[in-house]
Image (cartoon, protein in one colour):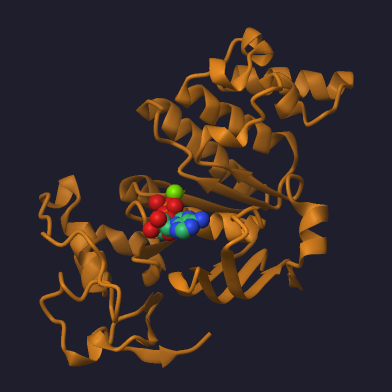
Length: 298
Ligand SMILES: Nc1ncnc2c1ncn2[C@@H]1O[C@H](COP(=O)(O)OP(=O)(O)O)[C@@H](O)[C@H]1O
Ligand SMILES: [Mg+2]
């Protein structure tokens, strides 16, 4: 297992943002973490990388290739074996030309050729290497991040919403490169709010809502409503264009009990309890007392 996270709770000033999260990524696997804006995706990515703000407390177990991912270990592997494709342009150094940032301080001929090739691969003229971050469009900045991730041979790639701002073909190309990285043996975590994109490229999909995992299942399960078990996942499925755009009126997740309490037609008293266990059913793990299946603990 490349990444193994268990019982992860992330809080800020005693407010819980992410609760009882788990994630397993094997070599060669692309896992999509899907969730609406504000569901806690970025804070999770930043907590793995150890770049969350100081007031963010992350508790639980994070193992990388079988070993605890300690601060010391992070110092060795971050940016090399574990790379982040960040969501926000502010992660680029504003004072350094982007070509140098992608080269990561290397100046030898082979590295420079690699940088040039990567810029070409992502349809950026070599003159873009001489630009500073503020001179890039949003889509270009994203391509620079991806080029930067590919400079090394990462074992684990965490891509935080890598496709917004890119037109469809470029988005598909970016995704195909993440797939390629997985084929070469890396584990890839792709964070997105685009369920369709996740269905296209992922092996496994984790659906996050209000900081809690609602369901983890194979991407294939999304081909039919019958192979999805959580009412929230089913609602997401029904809201997709090809399934009729049926939207539920609930927008804000409930803070106590199941986050989907208010939108669920099946909710009962027990759904208001704060601790709702996970249930395993076939290839899915569901956090719903109505789902059936076998209760499991991590
Ligand atoms: N440093 C922080 N301090 C307080 N709240 C935060 C902080 N970072 C994120 N949050 C809150 O945590 C929630 C999840 O944020 P985020 O991980 O950015 O969501 P997503 O990436 O899924 O859109 C949001 O409600 C956000 O306001
Ligand atoms: Mg985010």
